[in-house]
Image (spheres, helix red, strand yellow):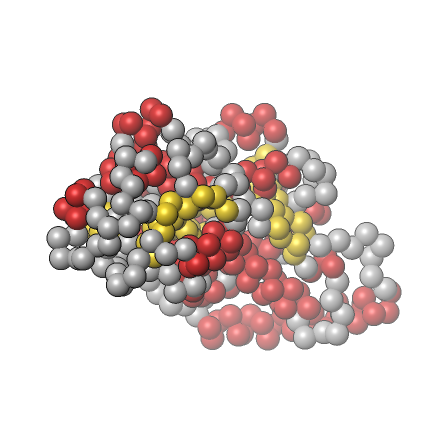
Length: 366
């Protein structure tokens, strides 16, 4: 993928910043003279821990751009985002003070219509399977969907099981118990992982199923991606699933995962992009609810799309502030997203999203 932002090179963005600097200085001066508005509040969001690192980066960028070198920082230019998990984020959106939720488990059109909400993609990435085994380096262990389903259901309990050895004939695997780890809170990462297991195993699909929150047949749970990552790092002989970028920054060893074509694929932004290609979003009534397709030979089989969900009843001014945040993220946040291990939205997709905004919210101010 190109290393530059989806809406311009670093030189173009620098020019844009120079052109807006004078306006930012005037805004700062005006605030110092007139005082802050009586109802200045940060943009409030909650939800996905999968996307939390990139939303946090975009929030810092947004504040820096709106401050634009001035001394005054208005709460209006700040973002208060709580990484509580996709399910909890959607539940919190019922609270009138919340401006948006971020979810890796997109809502069906019927629920959006019932609640008067809108939904659009903001970033993409993938779920890595992590195996913390002594003597096994990252990218050495191979696993398939059926074997993973058997591990998480309890049919396979030891690393030296014949089914695992058959996929890894050149590895010396310890004859030790597998420590199964998972999310215990409602999570879009769990939905992506259990969808993969359900596609691979009829038994898993019938007995357990796929959802953001499930009754796990076995294993230990932890809340949030960061805490689950720490537990995986501290637990020998363990296996779990984590957002790729956060697992990578923690130095945790990845598994090569078998895709629909039979290839074993290492998680990477390029492999996630290949897995997302069939799941393009077109703004139609049901397109947000469709999971990504299987992709081709190089596709990673657990790609994820994170969506922002906005209520229509929060008032135009509050909606415009949220859309301003994501517009700047689309225009200038592609490099940051890629550096954190995500796949930024393309310029074409960004254009489709902005057209969706206009359709749902009317003319938007910059």
